[in-house]
Length: 296
Length: 210
Image (cartoon, rainbow over all chains, first blue to last red):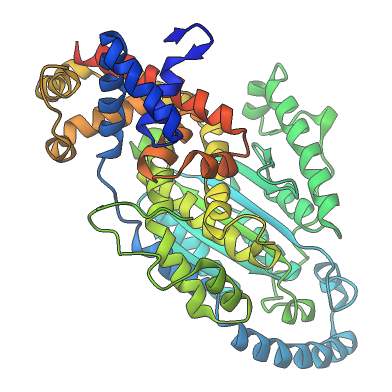
């Protein structure tokens, strides 16, 4: 509703919301008194606002609070633990440099500290949530990752919040890769330094997640995530992908991405590498959920 | 200034003797109880805003969790240029709008499948509420689950940007300046989005009520 240069609706909404000055309010009172149509419109808008405002409020699930509190221990405790861990890391690094098997070398990184801080969210869908959850919990237990992973259960999904070193992340992804084909979809969301900006890598593979996460600097992770996002989208839109899928090739060979080695010759390394002992530089939230169609 | 939701059942009285800036400082100084108080203070409010924007309780719970994970990750970088309140909601709304963009097709599909004709009682209640001849009864409307469902689904038919402004204003009770900060838009844009959003919502509700 307009009158001359004045947008009457905007004026009336601002009036309803108490956003007008005293002079403007007097103007509105005058308008209402002089024009039945405007008075009627005001009542319409007030009712509309009232309907939205009276919608019932829900309580946030209690799991959220317990999850967050479990995830963030007391900083004082962290500092104390960090001091002990740093001491352990130095000792472990010395011992490790002497006794470490060569085959495990690619699982560790040079030096004790990592300069990067990768953060992302991996969204996986599966029709068999119970089995996948049981599998992931076993992986966490077998690899002694319970200090790095906090879990939460929501109605149709399980959330695993990983915070740890590169070696631990690789262990987790290595095992996840073995059941990757059971996921209906896999999407990696990588945060960028720009507020609110995200990079979404659709149909991501475990290898790609590992490769993105293992970059030395966050900027490199972001760049690689962008590349994979483009490549995966291209691969999905290329003709003949159904044939490739039927023959077991997930991506066309022309744009095959060099895959990093996720697993060593054997899976004997169950414990975090020395680099893990003092670094918590990787954060990955894994959400496994039932696909929308199944959950509705 | 931080508005508290007025007379909302189920919400603890927040803001009493607690100042967010002070809690943030204490949190940064290592006091995890301060962090817990901030989470408790805002988790329901953030959850409700997210829920009314995305209309899916499971996704809202996950996005609320993501919001607080981000807050925890970034609290050391929070410069205090805006209040903690608008900063936290900015993170929440950004995550939710990103989510909405990714899930547009699913949302539209579920709305198209909706059959409003089957809810004749709720339609009549909506008609009565909107009618100029009768005095609206907000308490009755709040208790009518079907009517609330219609309003929520009607909200979902709005543009994401319009819906976010309406939810922040009418559910969370933010003023226009706070909404502008949360969405990083001009005050004039808040006015126009709110105005267009309410007009559109009114049209949708009138169509449904017949």
